[in-house]
Image 1 (cartoon, helix red, strand yellow):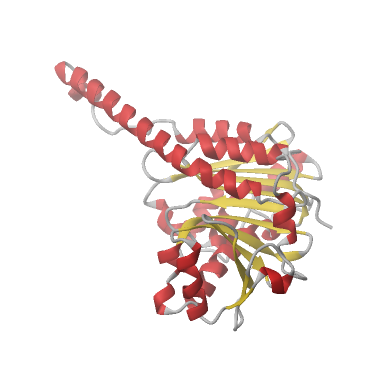
Image 2 (tube, rainbow, N blue to C red):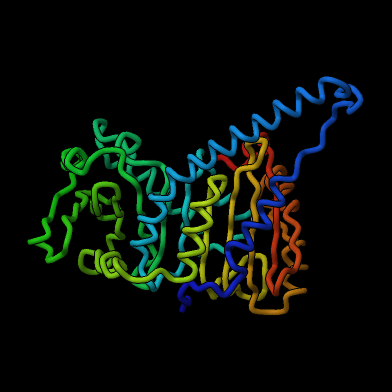
Length: 343
């Protein structure tokens, strides 16, 4: 049985600090440094400082804008979460390729894969008048509980709930009121094979609740309200609120089976962060249950012949090293290399 998600691996703040150092290392320049001497240096320096200040101001504004969403989502997280992810990627990548490149165990990678399933399912069940992009923000928080292998999803609303309800009704969803269900919220049930119920939690947030959970599935969300955050929730809120460069965080407890290791994995942490050239810097932290040196050797010898040559080159570039009893791998992908992660 999988264990509850705890902060037993590297503290998330430490992981993100290491990642920031990796992806903020300035790239080497092919230009001749002598060509940049003289008076131009002063102008370039002033322009660079102004650009840095503008970028910092933009990131601070973005952090201020995103923090309320993060706080809202974390407030709904139950205490028995097995895995959780926060995704604010500006473009969609193939989840299986991301998992292979960074060595994410399949069960933990399910959170990435199910986000793709959610997007594709919404395209099928929603009417042309109810396109998801019109009323749903793209960012999401996903988490699993012992009640279901299918994750919950939390998304932000781009429209008021009163405007969303007619869209759901027009797409074949049926509303069951709080009086009918005995719950605190109205629950929208699909007419077809859509694997989630939809609940408009408040003016800003919507929940996609696994359809196979008994009852309404609201109980874990409602029970989390008013409870103190766990350590891992505080770390996630702080890190994501302060660093708008972070695009994806995935945390999962174990034991997890890995195709790359003989030993199981006790905990996984994956972080993707925007790099200066609009690429991504990724860091994966794995806590193997067996011998660490043996695990690192296996990870650095990973072989996936079923993947194309470009993906194989990327996964070989993730060099794992020991850090505080964990196996830590890093990879910085240029903007051009991101095409190998797309569908």
